[in-house]
Length: 330
Ligand code: SF4
Image 1: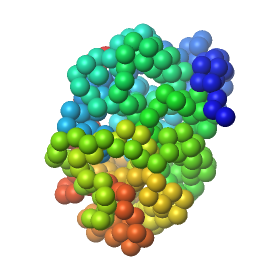
Image 2: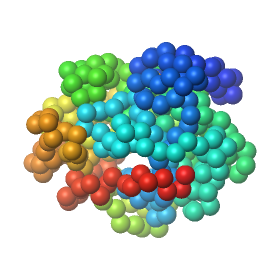
Image 3: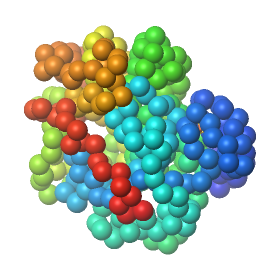
């Protein structure tokens, strides 16, 4: 039996004064202005809301994804690709009502979906904003774009409000997740979260849209029956960003996902890792992924028989994937 999201929402809102929204379980009184590991109080803060064209082609489509980038992050990875908002906490405070308006403004700009980027620590406010926006006419799919470091009971509060889950699965080895994200339990936690996401939305459902160009190829396997003309309406896409010198971790993750879900989810295998200034003192992270490293992972995915995967072609490891967080659309 499905839980009543509104009832669950009330439970989750009360957690802001003793915050256990995510696996960090800081118990910070965010309602009183304290911050936990995510670095933010209960004041909703976002750095950018705009059409975004750099997601997978079935998310960006021809018009773009309506991406809202929230400030703060409960992962705070050493190599963070959105450092200025996740660590630096740039952004502007907004009300729940303003967030609902932003969703409707993005829909009016013809966004294919609402893309909630790094939303975990604001789930209670996001639920209220989605409920208001939906009652005011929001009809496009909602994408929950997350590091994957989520608690299943927090995700359950989103049941019925989110159409597409876009989690990362960053690490398999706990030594690596401890070293780069201070999260030795990452694989156990994130895989349980992905199972809950799949329970909610199930296998992928697509609409057709006109053809487009993209930095992503549509599949690791040319026999895939999903073309670049498909726009996702429902489903799970698990992203994995290759990190330098972590090739075995990538193979283990891909094998796990395929053995667990087969072709009922999509994978997005990414080579765009960009060493930003904060990793200059971490030699292992201070380089890009080589073509040979990436190709070996793709060949492994193909050898397993994976059909539903997005891959990146050409030299995509560029800072051009990092948007301007100057407050556009907020
Ligand atoms: S959402 Fe933030 S304050 Fe709450 S448990 Fe997670 S990291 Fe801690």
